[in-house]
Image (cartoon, rainbow, N blue to C red; front, side, top):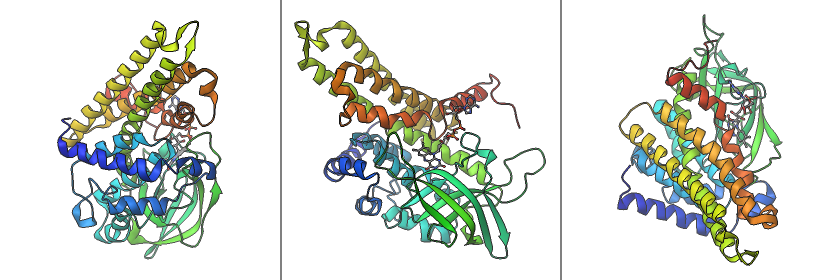
Amino acid sequence: MQITHEHQSLYDTTKRFIEEQINPNSKEWERDGIFPAREVFKKMGDLGLLGIAKPESVGGLGLDYGYQLMFAEALGHCNVGGIPMAIGVQTDMATPALARFGSDYLKENFLKPAVAGDMVAAIAVSEPGAGSDVAGIKTTARREGDEYVISGQKMWITNGTQADWACVLCNTGDSPEGGRHGNKSLIVVPLDTKGVDRRTKLDKLGQRSSDTAIIFFDDVRVPARNLIGSEGKGFTYQMQQFQEERLFLSASIVQAMDNCISETATYTRQRNAFGQSILDNQFVQFRLSELKTEVEALRALIYRAADDMLAGQDVTLMASMAKLKAGKLGREVPDACLQFWGGQGFMWDNFVAQMYRDLRLHAIGGGADEIMLGIISKRLGFGGKKKA
Ligand SMILES: Cc1cc2nc3c(=O)[nH]c(=O)nc-3n(C[C@H](O)[C@H](O)[C@H](O)COP(=O)(O)OP(=O)(O)OC[C@H]3O[C@@H](n4cnc5c(N)ncnc54)[C@H](O)[C@@H]3O)c2cc1C
């Protein structure tokens, strides 16, 4: 991907927003276990940052995916991992299928306000009994006249306590002969609807400024026109939507890992032991150089996937590889850097410690490393998972 002056300008705008509006407040939000999504998103919406690649008809900037990727990369300047995650849900996880397949009614009433920052969105796929195995979800949406009646439970939902609406994956029929995929649908559910209970905010190891909820649906009635696209196509739509999610998750941590490495170099340069700086040890230099090389290799892989996306090609293989690599580096980089900070690295407020906690999620959320390996194996013809 060629980075142009225009890409750089969008990157700089995003970075400035983070430095002025997010980083000064993030520690307080981490302590509170939540951030004011409505307030932050409104400011971002006013700058056009929530709809970079969304069409102008819904208030977006109508730019291509390369700009969306620049935005994701710039979010890596956040000094906590929870805020990029919450923003990514709004821009790259809950809204791509709606933008691609939603009716004019849905776009006007849910996508447009999400792009403007007037509504907070969530994506609700995972359940207590089905995370990796998406096809195993149990939430049902029963058609009754002009409505769907939704019952079930969704687990670990980012933005869950604050969101105005969620893009919910439901079973809209019995499993058709020979598969568990053709009976699923994506439905937009306003979360103030009677029967929705999302009071249970989860206590997490990291990403604490982002609220994560269990959402219960007890005979929740929504208009049938809240269905995204066609009934029975939800699994396919979600698999497509996952590619944007996975590329976002990968791109949004590249800068954070870069920062771990550069801050560690700065610290170890001025910290002395045995008559020399810690950085004077060749082992430390080599390790940091190796990590930086790995991070640059990840960046190149993400750009390769972005090129495929811009060319209108299927990005499943490249996005899965990028997500796998990001999940692994998200553990390796903060862990290795933390070691070189010694006791100081073990302190709660240390930036590297923050990333050690926050980036751990990337090997699990949006499809665990092992799920990525399964997809890659299958795509490469090495076998992969047998059909259910
Ligand atoms: C902070 C946070 C935010 C989240 N936000 C959202 C959200 O907004 N919306 C949403 O829908 N979900 C969300 N999730 C859920 C997340 O996507 C799931 O946790 C993830 O997909 C893994 O599912 P699981 O936890 O059920 O793990 P399981 O499916 O129980 O798997 C557990 C582990 O088993 C291993 N494993 C699983 N399958 C295989 C296999 N085939 N081969 C080898 N090993 C395997 C993997 O190591 C995996 O990590 C979030 C999770 C967290 C922690």
